[in-house]
Length: 167
Ligand code: S3P
Image: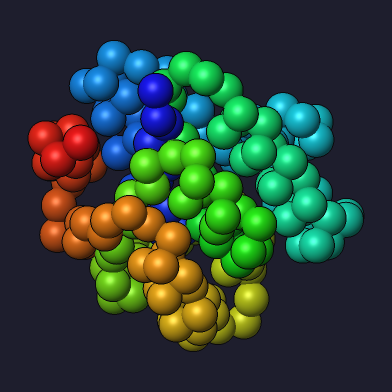
């Protein structure tokens, strides 16, 4: 049975929608960032600070490949940068039904402006950083996903309900 992978920017609702969707589909839900933190034994933020982004991306690819090798159906909430690597995009296209939860930069910023946990936003101008990330990633999310859902104006419950009806 094909797993469902949710991709999208930090703050796009991958975690909350994923949890609700798995409940509706009566299957397991896996948060890839949690699985990764279990593997590295510390927070992503600490790992970023100590080992850097490239080391993080290597482990992210291993975790994604391991999760997508499972035969059972599951909903995966991925990390926002998972589409940066070609190998990850191929895995998401081949081994999952991948859905892009698309939220525009303004709505993302409203959700993330007080966030202190996401290492990529711990910079002098996080709003500009978010815009830059969106510009690079939006086409990658679109090309990787089997379909895109515009979820900026929706609650997590509405998005999960709509998505479950489309699967
Ligand atoms: C990242 C997003 C994070 C996490 C890591 C890197 C990114 O996940 O994987 O901090 O590159 O955008 P969320 O999308 O759940 O915040």
